[in-house]
Image (tube, rainbow, N blue to C red; front, side, top):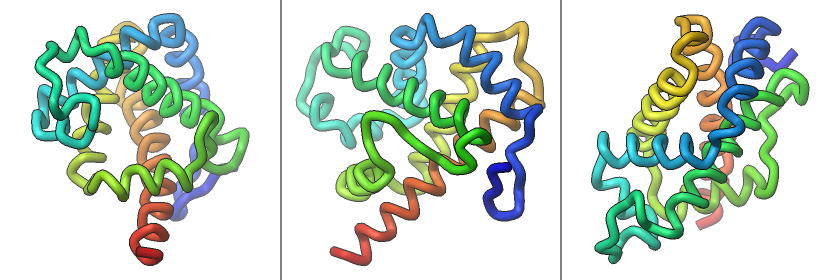
Length: 163
């Protein structure tokens, strides 16, 4: 079983995450964009963290680089959650935790950014699967997200010590 700081990601949590991701997967592009729009609605200053948004006057929904980026982050986050228990640790495809840590460190991502992102992720999932949503599902996704963030922060810390 995947353990992290004494907590276990249970079979029940895994089942909730897998069940909801199965429904959401077909709308990943749309949900990824909604996810990022929520982040920017809550924290408009977060746009400065993205080079392709900094000097853009195009509405966010029409930014040609935002949608693919948002989809890839949403899919990576959800896929990481789905495999958490099976793999016994956080894993990501098409990238590495080391690369994610380095990127987040380089752009100055801080704890508050991760908290806003968690809230936006949970709200996006809640809206995507309202009939399935429950406190248990919220806790399952929250736990999986927290583990992904903890793994990214470990790599960010390694970057800060190397700098």
